[in-house]
Image (cartoon, rainbow, N blue to C red; front, side, top):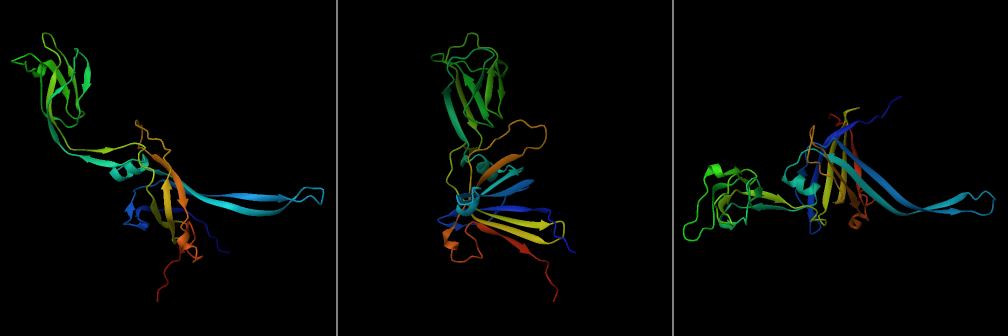
Length: 253
């Protein structure tokens, strides 16, 4: 007697939908967990003839297909997807004589940039401002912060000049409208056969957690909903939400 056990591994892809058309697929990296959940609202009718109040009829009113999983690879596009944000490339820029206000020794101040270079500070003495020496401050150029060690005799405010490096910004919870086609290339390691899953339209839920401290490799939870594509209604083989494809081993000619 044959058995059909299943133990799936595979690759997940997202294809952004623009004007109703799915674009190129993007592999989203290692996904240790992913599952689909099918839900339904069911109308139940209870008969009143037998004295037992049994359910004698049910009707499915609405259906839903939801997904949830874990992402491990956090490149720019995955980060944008996880936090429902947008990506912006910020170019390098030189800024001159930006006021830091009145500063005190020991205070750490955030400058407007990262990977800073050509950094100088001066005070506001009229006519001949005093340029601070490097022993008067401690600079963290990578993160763009400065701690002033000695401000005695300086006229406030302190003015900063520097060049910030090019970086990428990803906003938080600012983009909830994007839809993606989801595609899964799977292999059933129990029998060597292959399985595919295709969801025509998916929209990720904005609700997620984004851990900032890790003892091990980070994993980032994602969840969302598959939306129906009524253009597929005329072909029952396609399915309104999508379908699962069982791909048997190729038969040699």
